[in-house]
Image (cartoon, rainbow, N blue to C red; front, side):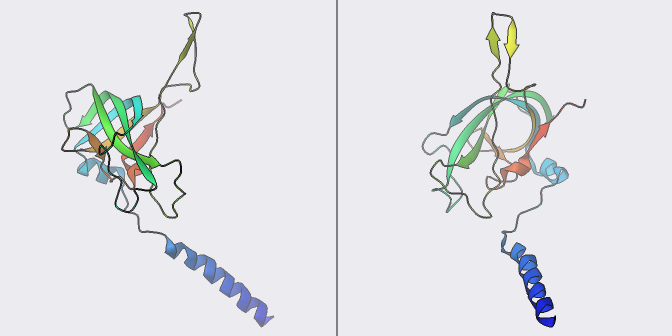
Length: 166
């Protein structure tokens, strides 16, 4: 009986300690993201494209697994900061097609372009019920574009999906 208890204890301890292998991830509550951001806005996706050579440089050591993306947003409402343009570009990253899943890797963001289909000039069919709206917490780059305030590696902390209350 004591051998069984010992085996169970060792198993439980191994599962409990396995979480210690994860990388430390900074905590970004909305209050922190808001205070550190240059701008905070409500926006909708206008277009998505792959970044051109040199336009988006992946975090060091991740070049093989990550590729740059440029997402254009239509500015709906500014909450913090000033941006006179009606659209902005966000530089972020995605996993490369040949890249493998990175254990304890980045928490990346991805977006969809809302594309309604018009049939007979009157009927609109969409894959989504509504166009997604995002709250973005961003810092301005030297080239006038933006990047996530939480950094490129954990960009998910800088983007919040805004949903309509029903």
